[in-house]
Length: 287
Image (cartoon, rainbow, N blue to C red; front, side):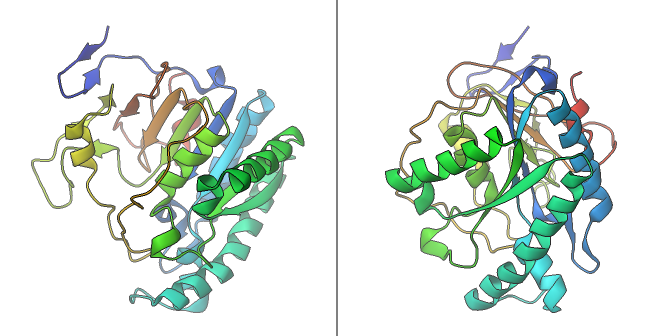
């Protein structure tokens, strides 16, 4: 049974196992992949690749939206935690992207999976010709049974022509490719009524049944993390997506199992904090 309040928050929907979804988009945050002092978290990455391999063996198509290029480049170049100039961030992305793509290829290869790198800018999902070209390329990779590893092209993106964060990029990719489910893996458990690090009274919201002005206000601005890119407001002129929305949405914290639901129309947003488990326990959630 589902109870929905006036502000769009609902509870009581049981999650569906991931095996029920044919095409799944997974976004991984920088903090999960990269340690600020030691670099790439290879064991965590391999654990996630193991789950991707298991899902692929069951017939699912997986699209990966991977953050971490700038954070990894920072470590490789020894830039520390200082604020970076635009050209320094772009240089760090150039160095980090090569290492990140190689790590994904190595981890997925252990399961006999090939991978292909896709670097997108905002214009690739805003301009129709580029949108169709990007969709065709990703579709071809999936037909060839390769895992697309997608990231924003931070080597050329600026504040005026960027998504702002990879959550938005992942949503665009999931919509563009007609994904059945979007999973956001993050070091944050999910949606709160306020930033929990700054507001002790912040309340965790397990399920958002519909997007309302109150829900949009809770999202606020992106958190600023030294390991990745500075927080920026989303571009104001983003156009509506021209593909059907993904049917499900999961958000999972670093050490929590995610949950999901299926819907028609706009996808409900569900997130649930649970006891710590394996780093990539999301693929076993609900089933």
